[in-house]
Length: 365
Ligand code: FNR
Image 1 (cartoon, protein in one colour):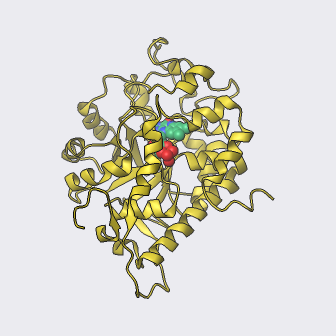
Image 2 (spheres, rainbow, N blue to C red):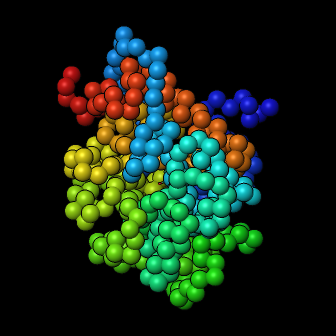
Image 3 (spheres, rainbow, N blue to C red):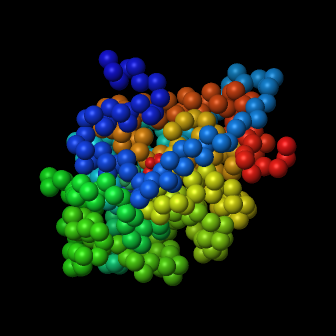
């Protein structure tokens, strides 16, 4: 059948497009405004080339790595994406099971259609919780506590969304969460009344308000309400990377929110190295945005990332084939990455170095 013939991660997108209502597909696929950054997230990878080493015994390749003390099968993890039940009835639960089966880490979105408790009870696995700091800090406190209790191992706080980016397809489609779904993490919580004119309509259907005043002081506060490691998601500059390290955060995710926020920011793979240089190894640096191939994963690691996260590939595979689709996405990326390591002469993650790639900004040749 169709699903068995799939040979790369990108192929799921066309199937998802056929299957999903236009409003849902557009919500998952779109970037902000001109979508320049959306295209650039992919095309920047194609400007980075390999410098493979030969005649190295690559009969054994080890793709395992350790992230915040957790050993995982490969440096490829699942990014938080909102509202996965629009893609498939099992939504985040299917993603959680597939990610555990692949031996890696899932990040659950605060804006998920399954709660932290539901995801925890679907089976064992190492999971992170993605937090948006909303205006009602009591609710933030409760959410963090529930994530801790449910066994989540880290908080990824997303900082590139003080306001919602302009995704024109969503505006045209009058995107809204289908009425049979809810943002489960908020069920039963007493939310402060929101100003429904404030956030391009988003607040109207999710029922909570992102905090536009969010700043470095809030990050300090967040560290006082939890012992979990905090990753800052949405860093694109050396300046902010240095500040984040100074503030004592546990890790940085170089991300442009899948090109859904500010258009004309660089591709994350272009911003990665300046962040890595600023951080100087003090905390791990991760990347998401446009990762679709094992070669992309290798390039990110060669430029200093400790691991990558994938967003849309998971959602599209979920739409096309549920849990099996997500499993296959993770398997294909694993296999491509392992092959890339072998063909580059790298037997373990720590053997991947800067010298294994060349970039347009190198002046060595
Ligand atoms: C996202 N992203 C996101 N990020 C976040 O912190 N919280 C969220 O709820 C969501 N929701 C979300 C929905 C959809 C449909 C997409 C495509 C993205 C951003 C996500 O975590 C990640 O940064 C990007 O998806 C990575 O880029 P790729 O892999 O999609 O190219």
